[in-house]
Amino acid sequence: MTAVATTTMNTVKATSRPHNPILRIVKLHTVNPSVFFGIPWIILVCAWAVTMAIAAILTRAGVDPTGMHEGMRNSWAVLAPQWYLVVVGVQAVSFTFPFALGFGATRRDFWFGTSAMFVLVSCEMAIAIATLVQIEIATGGWGVNAAVFDALWYGRQGWLADFYATFCLQLLVLFIGAAATTVYMRWRARGMLLLGLGSVVLALLLFATITFTESWGSVIAWLAGLGMTGAFTLVLAVAAVCCAAGYLVIRRATTR
Image (tube, rainbow, N blue to C red; front, side):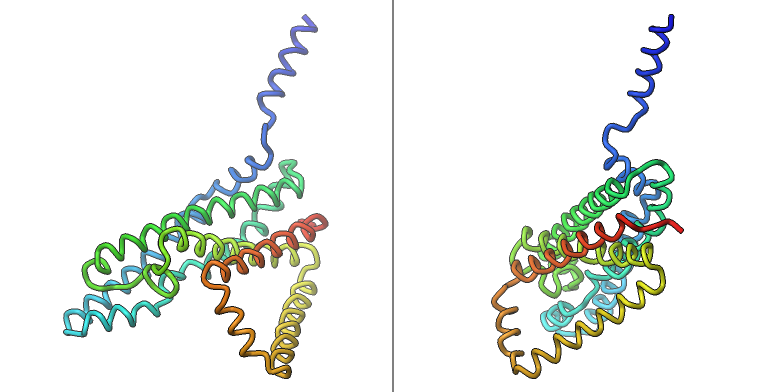
């Protein structure tokens, strides 16, 4: 009897224990799916609706459709969700981190699971936006020469390039928010103040160095030489730095 009871208890524990703690963190982030998958699209749909209304008004007023389309390509409507996703990165750490630790997750598993969630969200947004760019081009700007997705650097080098650009940019904004929050979790207001001042000082030093060495022409030429893929690879590298920095800081972060 004792042997049977012990075997039964071990079986129950084995089935109840999570096989993948990183996947458990991903599931924890999807408890409220609207944060990652709902609100960003509500923002983007609103930006699309406003742009469509403007395009319809301008078309009705007899504005040259070609000129209108080119002018709308300077619109930042396609990037409307990015500002919100910085906040999502903040919330992913500030709200979920204490809860995850309370359920026995390690800091390592939490950060890896959160990073996996960021990759998942970035892929979802990148696939959708790259596809919407092609639909917008194929329909002639939704029939009214509007440019919501086929704007800025989008729509020039094909689906894959648009996917890569969106994926890199999404990861950057998410990890900026998350990494900054780990600083707050570790050092509170003093850490955030030092982070802000340090960022400003570093930016000013970089600006002064380029200005005094008269290197702006070389810097602009170097950036132009990177092309779209190279530029967003640089964005991805910055996102990776933020990810690594956030991991190092959160290892000693507290929930109080």
